[in-house]
Length: 461
Image (cartoon, rainbow, N blue to C red; front, side, top):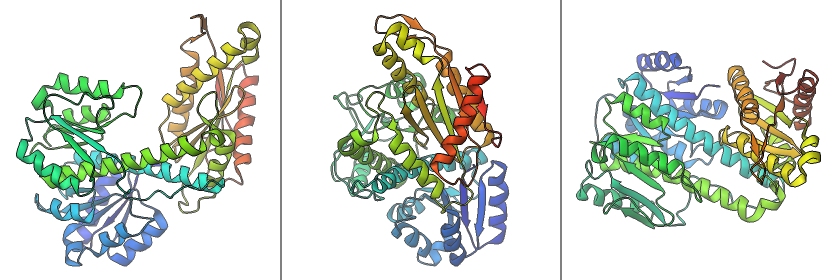
């Protein structure tokens, strides 16, 4: 399902222009002419991002943004101010109002699309965290609610040493001062090369004009491959007209990008949003790790177990806040697994299951659920996935199991395949049992047809 964009602008020509532009890129666009319409569509549509006319909201003393940011259900929905002309001072107001971004009505099509996609992907991750916490609460575990923005509770490290060509000491000092209001334990590193302490930084600002494009992208690759800790975020510095360079940075998983002439408040706003999301994710992961590991995780693979998966799936099915949302399930079974245990022993069998789990996890988004149902059987749950995407994911997962040999503890190669059953993609299911049973039936058909294949439910796409 495309990202849901809600546009609030009292000027009808602006609304029509934005809907035409955004619909071309498959965004699901809803238009609001006044505050009452906006509030209605927020309640009914649960938008992924909200575009607000800066001029209109300023004239109303920012009534719209104040309401959105003060309501628990909407505080984490990203808000973008739309302005008529380039005016850096808008960022001063937007930072105070906790608005996530500022765009011109006449912004280049690729730029607006890139900005909105970044915000929507970030919100999807927050949605997944909130869903996890609700599932945990439903299972009877007492956990403090996630709030947005999260309360500052830990040391935050930002590394600017790879961007000193664009941001001088005065700029960095002002940036540190602005960010320090939201992050009292902020530590900013700006000299002597990138941070080299054991844990590194939470966020890096990387400027190819300061260190060279090759070094910049090599550093991003290094950060993505870092082991033993969470992958840090990256803000990439690139002129707005450099579309190719920006898109390459996004392909390398940059969390955001910024023009080298950006104001202090613009850069601070972008960093603040990323760090807030980082903190929420950190808090959620710590809660699960500390209190709920044994109850929710499979001890062999580290994946969620059947108990959690069924509860989470039931919540997705019962969520009526998004009436058009769809849920799809895949049941994945390793073929002829008993022969592996019989031939190589159960320790090797356990190793194959662990490796298979890792391959599945590596090929799914953080917002998708992958769980071990038991034995050599896994469950994958996709929310709001198009028919094409479901097919692509199912084939990719099957291929990832079959194309590379699994290694035993002695380095011996074992070739394993998997059969996958895919449920129908529907907006309504009676229960988690129904959707799993639907995928199970499709799985048995895949087995009967010769294994190492994907089979879709008769009602699936």
